[in-house]
Length: 98
Image (cartoon, rainbow, N blue to C red; front, side):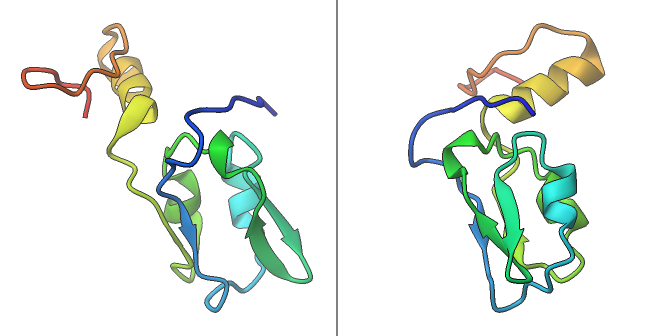
């Protein structure tokens, strides 16, 4: 697993443990090992490693997770993969990263 840390304390990832069923799909799809499952519930253990890609949210069968996946560098990197353009985390007016 890649262990990148982004800006501290700014990730929008949220987990509602009251909805979690412990399926562990979040641990399977997260590229940065943000989650663990312990005592049959997911836990966020590395929030600052979250790149807000949205893989966990898209795979959670009970909507226990939320994230604003349309912002930040993850969106810019995914956009660059799709378009072949250089990634740009600059979401100012005129930019097409977000």
